[in-house]
Every structure is written in C-alpha cells, then in structure tokens.
Length: 434
Image 1: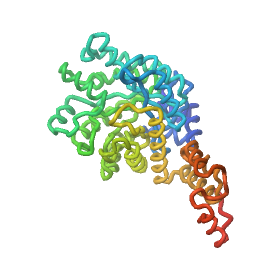
Image 2: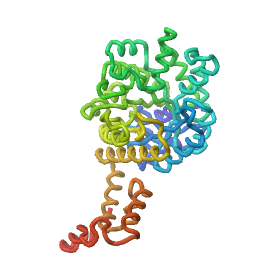
Image 3: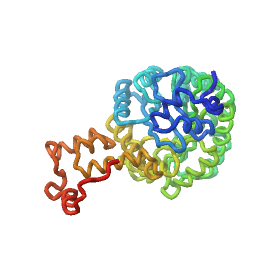
Image 4: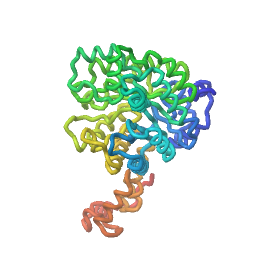
C-alpha cells in the first residue's frame, strides 16, 4: 500500500484528498501540495472508511478537536456517548478518545462507530491500564506492550495517534535543573517519565521510533507528537525543557516525513499572550512547518470555571498566528471531569476562536460568513441570523425567550432600532449582497 503522503509527493490526487478539498472549499491540488511538503495532513483512516477526511494545515481553516473518554469509577460508556453527541452537535471537526480506565476497547469501538469525524487516541493510556492489570503495576509494562497497543489502535481504524516520542532522559534532566513551578501536567507524559525513572530506561517511543514508523506506515495513520513536557502554567512557558523537547520532535518529524508518514505536533496549554506568536513561530521553524495542534492555549491561570473563555482568547490568537488545530477546553478544566453541557460549551468556544483566527488571516470563507450574517442583521432577517450563527440552537432559544415570536423589530431596541432609523434617514435600504 502506498502512503497518502508518498502519493501526494508523486503528484497524485487521491479520492481522500478530493473529499477533504471539497469540504474545505479549496482545490485538490492545494491539499495535495500541502501534504507533499509536510505543511498539511489529511486525517482519514483507510480502515474506518466512514470518517470524513479532514485536511489540517497551512493555508486552511483552523479546525477544532474535542476530547472524551472513560476516566475513573464514575464514568460510563453511556455518559461518554452523550458527550460525543454533544461535541458533534456543537460542530467539532474531530474527536479524541482519551480513555484511561474501564472498558477502553469497547469505548474506542463506540467512538469510532458513532463519529463520522476523524478520531484520535493516545495508546499509552490503554497500555498503562492493561499493564497494571496484567503485571500488578504499570511500571512493569514493556516496549512490546506499547508497540502492540499502537498497532491495535491503528488496525482498529483510528485516524491519528498521539505519542510522547520526544520526552527523553535529556529533557527530563533539564526539567530537573530548571525547577518548574508545575513540573508535569501531561497525564501520559508523567506516567511515561515515571516508568523511565523507575526502570532507569530511555523512552521506548524514542529508542524504537523506527518500529513506531513501521506501524504508522503499515496502516497509513497520522502521528500526532504529544509534548510530555507541556508547561502547566504561564511561569513555565517556553522554558528549556519545553524547547528541548520541541527540538527533538522536529528531528522525529523529519524522520517520519522522510518515510511518507504524516505528522502533526501537539503544543502547549498555558501561554502568555506575549509569547503565543513566538511559540508558534518556533514550532514551525523547528518542526519543518508541520501542522500545530494546541491545547487552547490558556492565557491566564486564574480562570478556573471559565477556562473555555481563557482558552478561546489564546486559541484565536494562536489560529491567527499560524496554529491549525485547536483542542477545546471546557469550563471544568482544572476542576473536574466535564459533563456533556460543558463539552458543548468548550467546542463552541473553540470554534469561535478558530473562526476569529481565520478572519484575522483573511480566509475568504470566514470573511464571507461574517458578511452574510451582517447583511441578515441589516435586514432584520432573524431566521438568517439564527441559521448563520455559530450556535443556531442557542441563538434561537435566546431570541424566542426575549421576543416571544419572530418580529421585524430588534429584540433589544424595539421601535428605537438603529438599523431602521439609519436606513430610513440615509436611504440605504438596498445593500450589496454577498
């Protein structure tokens, strides 16, 4: 089987590229060129053909991913399915099943069955859980356990796989010397580092990276390099450990791309406003322009309960500065496991951020969408305004609650509507259509 990236390099426009281009509203050649030079990926498993191919990368609209998964004794597959449906209904572009406990295999199967959007996973989570049952401790997991699980996920039809391949002993030693405020916030990264230190071993995902690439190539699954040293607070942003790991991920990106494997790089979750542009420019430079998948990022550590707002601010600036994929953050971040309502709120906030970033970059589709809504607002066309809003259901509910029924009057101003007054006195009833 020839890999999608290899076919793109050879000038071939595949059916998957055509479908992704149609969804994006660009020419298939634009997608092919991005995949060929490594600045774009097309997420879409060859095994799970039901998933809609999704293009992520330079020059394309920013995309949004929502996270679900079993976590702890109070979670259930039924509860996570409710969150999946909420995320899909809110318009997420992709899902990540990050289950760490319970029947992870069944949960992943349900996620893939329900979602027509690309699905990503982090196989290390399931490896840790199964090793704890098998050996009595996850510290006893083996290289083979990790590689077998990666292949199990790829063979099962996931579209992209997150791996902490760049978290090496050198990076850990640097973090020790720098004495971070929050040493580790990555679940997978912290457990992997614990395993490395306990067993006095190098990261097997780094040592056996050629084996990882062999699996990825076998199933043509996209790799998403996760940052095990992801800063967990603003004070640690852009420290030596983070940048050191990014340098290594850049080297691994080049190795993956050289054998035809598609790559994304996952980025930090806490970044001060003044460092967002620098952070993204650094990733682009070190990782050869590979798509950047960011967690928000949060621009303040003080917004507990409102972290979806903090993340939307960071996400908008990140998308404007060149990040292409935004992992949504819910209001429950740092407090607890989100419910379906909070998942929906997180997705909507991330979509607003992505769209704001697209507007900042002058993306034609984004500009056209805003103008269409502006024209509808000028005409007091409430039906069109609701349809064109980022969350039509909420928009319609608020409208009905305030007005009781559709009206030609503004629900805020009534007979004092500025739109009607200005139109009457300036005689500008006819506006240019989009």
